[in-house]
Amino acid sequence: MDRIKQVKHTTLSQSVRTIRWIIILGIFTVVIGYQLLKELVFELDPMARIIFSIFLYACIGSLVTWIALTWVSNRIARGEQAEQAVSENEKYIASIAASSADAILSMDPDGKITSWNKGAELIFDYKEEEIVGQYISTLIPDNLLRGGELEKLAAEIHKNGYIRSFETERLAKNGRIIPVSVTQTALTDNEGNLRGYSKIVRDITEKKEAEKWMQESFGRIVKAEREIREMNSKLEAKVKKRTQSLSKAYDDLKRINEDLKSANEKLKEFDRMKTEFVSMVSHSLRAPITNINGAIELLGQIDMPCENPEQKELIEIMETESARLTKLIQSILSVSRLEGGKLKLKKERVDLRQISQKVIRNLETTVENHSFSFSCPDDLPLVTSDANYTEEVLVNLVDNAIKYSPGGGEVRVELAKKGDNVIVSVIDQGIGISDKEMGRIFESFHRVDGSDSGSIGGYGLGLYISKRLIEAQGGKIEVESALNQGSKFSFSLPISRDE
Image (cartoon, rainbow, N blue to C red; front, side, top):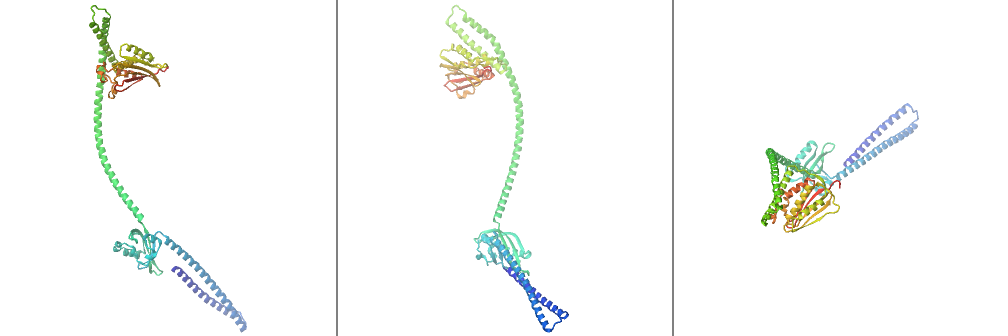
């Protein structure tokens, strides 16, 4: 408003000065012109000169006055337009200041607050009528007042005319301390006299919180980095120690491996020597056993005089034991061939129905308390296998079913087609196999330790040989059993391709 008054006063002053000079110059010009015309041109009588003079002064005076007043009117109109523009501009600036989120206020030279915007009210909680007229020290915390902040700011403003973005603290109405950024400017008149101060105060609480969070985060990062370095250092030491331990262990393992390799070579050599020895001994025993069997057979066929039951019983015992010894030697020879890789298979198309029926016929004549059953589909295909070895496996399984069913019962032989194989199963109702024995029954020289097995003959080679023979022919042998509930041994052989 003061500026508008100043602009208006300036415009009127200039207009008055201009009119004054226009009138003076106009009258001066008219007078000079009239005198020149009167002396040089007009030769009129006095009355005509008077009339002419009156007419001249009246017209020219009116014209000059009209021109001057028109010019002044235009100047005043332009001044009013400028006054209106200044007024609108000041209103616009005032509305910006009033609606700003920052606190915008003014003070007189003594530090009394003279204006207070909406942003200041939001930040400090003071209404305009509550704070205007109060000293600015009302908004400054006591510790800063005692520290001389006002004096320092005054000295800085006196030196530079302003302070900018000075970060400090201010006090709200409810006693809350607010971190703020202060920009303050000295206001002077045209002569340079101090008229007051304008101040912009911005709440930087969020900024300070962000800085605090960043500092805390940076501290945590530094701490984490330090801990990571310590962990890396410890880890490197551990890795170095473990590497040395692993290197030593590797050297030890390498040495042990070499020792094991040497021992393995020796074991292989011993095993080869054992196999050769067993084979040699078995072959050496076959000849005398064959002769003994022949002699016993002859003794059984000869009608001896004075034959008595005891002699006949002795001959039968010799025949039985000789047969057992012969079977043992044959089993040992089979094991020797299997372990020595000298087993030769004669694969051909084999009818498992015929082999199974043959085995059952041969064995059922040797038992009294057992019965046999046989089941086979009519369209059972032929298999590819070695007939002799397949028969040997089936004999071993049926013989075991008989031996491990000392109380008698039924022995079933079942044949079935499953996929690309034929499955042969031998099922008994004997003593069964415990869980702890199940994993070892196919080991060489292992016999089932059942309650009645002490009286059951055998050397623990039958299942071992059977497993090796079936696997050599591309099949698989399995067992299902439970203690005192019987057993089921099954093996598979591949169906002949021609089938």
